[in-house]
Image (cartoon, rainbow over all chains, first blue to last red; front, side, top):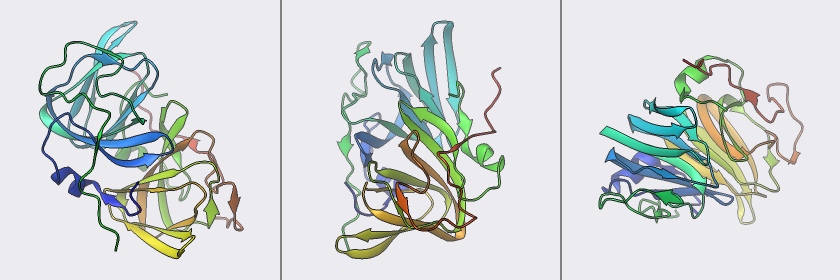
Length: 136
Length: 136
């Protein structure tokens, strides 16, 4: 993993793909990922892990299907929210957003169960970030 | 844990204590903490866990004692870095900073081994955040 700090805004400029997370750091057996998002992700659920979101730029909505019904939380820039494991959810960002996520290494972007995945959603456990600074 | 998003800048306005982390979210058995910092923390080491830092505002320095010698990494606003477990380190911020940290629930601010702790450093596993929004 990186031995030097990573500037997130620089890491974000290094790729354009939407809904295609880049791994910027690792914490024990967890990955810290960043992604550019716009439009809709898919309904999916992580059966065995919570999923943490921090909005770096823009605005992210997360629709949640809970025992009490469906609701949506809205995260402005600088807001955080954790989707509990086992909760079906669908992130979406009509006007675009940059987000940071934390989840166990190997967690799939579409979870353990999901609806049909459209072409614009990357099914991945995260890509290496290309913006890693070189060692001095 | 919070069932609604937390705006970090609001959570930060809810307390003034330095080097005294507030828990803003939980991800499985990890805590997401925020802290205001200024001046020097203490040399300490977490024997069993990495420690992730994201600078929300200001600038954070982390001095590291590695097998190859001592060095300091500097994190500008919006930068991330993970201190590997077992690496003795000392965060400091001469001009102040607001930071987000991620580590296993129960991790002490001064690690498993540390130098003498001055009065301005809070020895804690993190406090509850006071800025949690009320349920609608």
